[in-house]
Every structure is written in C-alpha cells, then in structure tokens.
Image 1 (tube, one colour):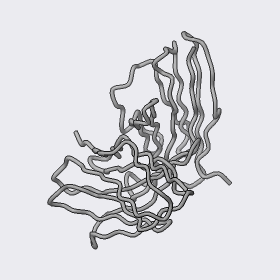
Image 2 (cartoon, one colour):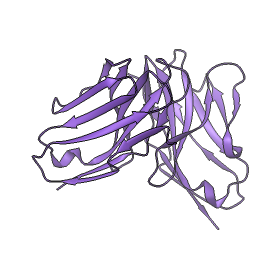
Image 3 (cartoon, helix red, strand yellow):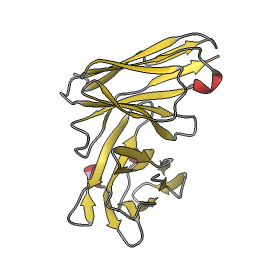
Length: 111
Length: 113
C-alpha cells in the first residue's frame, strides 16, 4: 500500500520568513501528488497539485512545491509566510484509485 | 452555496447509540468519499461511491454502513457507537474516479461518551 510521510509534525516560523514543509512518498510507480491545507474547524482545501509536466508547481497563496522523482519527495515551500498561513498542511498521493494522506504538518506562524 | 455540505456539524452521544451523518454535494460529481480524521489529524479513507455504487470499502467495522441514495448524496450510519469512533468525519467528492482534486465538506465532529 502507498504511504506518505510528513517528517515534521510541527513547524514554527516567524512571519515573513521562508518555510519548507517536507513530504516523501513510498511508491516508485507514477503517482499524482497534492498539498492540501486545513484551517481550524474547516475541511481541507487544495493548495496545489502535480499531475505531469513541469516538476515545479505553483499553487494558491504564494505556495509552490517541487516534485523530485528520484527522491520520491514533494516538498512545499513559501518564500515569505504570513500569520494567515497558520494551519495544518497535508501532503497526499493519488494511486490505485485512492487518495493517501500524510499525517499533517502544523505550520505555526509567529509575529 | 456550499459545495459539499455535511450535517450535523457536531454530534455528542452515548456509547451503544446509533447515529447518522449526511452529506450532499452540488458540484455534479459522481464520486463521493467518507474519511475519518482521528485526534492526531491522521486522515483515513473509509468508503468511496461512484454513481451510487460502492467502489472502496477499507477495513472498517461493519457497524459503519454507508448509503448513497443518488450520486449527490452519501450518508454514513454508525451502529452501536464505541469510544474509539470519536473523530471528525469528512465527506468529499470528485469528478469521475480521478480528476486531481477532492472537494471536502467542513467535517462532522462525533464525540462518543
């Protein structure tokens, strides 16, 4: 079965600093990759996705992610975070008709 | 208009009771899912329906029974509730079996006392 690993359960960062949230997946076959964001007491919303093509994917709110097939990684980055980016971030893989989610990374942006 | 709506948003009940959560989507999608999010935020798929037909049934106790009366609705009924059923249950939908995005409801927080 597919597994998705988010190495950091919590990432504290100061406002306007850059951030990287890490994600690795287990499958070596073709996969589709996603980052979702969950604000408190809300459902998940899509930030960005990689289906094919350019390995650098840009999403909403200034986020981007890079697909690295050799390292089976799909790390999420933002050059300058804002207080409003405080949320839980989930990496997900679509394979074999299912979405598999990582355990989430809580991004805590401090003033 | 909410794209994927779930009711109720909060549910508090006693062990042994039976409860239902309803989900409706107005996106015209034909695939719907139930996910369970535990206290550690881990999201696990439970069921998936495509055009009212069950296509994914993970190893979920048979106390959980999904029902899809039409492709816009997917309900979840839980019998004989246990403490471990306490979680947030998310309904989600997507067009076809895969188009690249899941649309989530806001979740239903179930607390079993």
